[in-house]
Image (cartoon, one colour):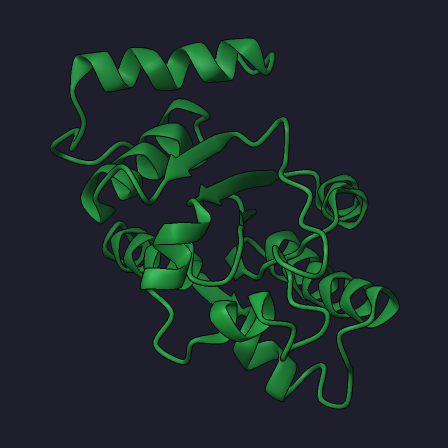
Length: 200
């Protein structure tokens, strides 16, 4: 039986975390793995109802997601978390707690995020109408050692998904699929990143 692990998507609002998490989930389910997705917005409505957006409340929210991911991972489920999780310290805390933890940093520039924002929240935050908006009036600390970095402004969803799946295969966390879905050049790039991080 495949061992559980946590796949943690972090990035600003609109960077593609939930979209990519769902696509990766579907591929892992097809390969016979047990998978649960914890989406930041859904968690806030249920597990973290009543929490605000202060640093303390954000930290509590991310620790709660980490706690659930740890339980799932221990029971051989693949836990996929998709949450802004702005603070490096709390993400690293979850990494230490869970152990089998793969971080995916969804990177996108502000212009792309604004263009993808149907509610105009970035515009409102930039105009000072929304307080504590991550990436504008509240800090976001990008990870410096994420196992996967996807630039969702520059690459299409298919390329980002292939990079994530390829990394999980190279780490031995999931069985290899029939077709690779990524080129030899991309495979070498994945291996180089894992070498740099000391995995291989």
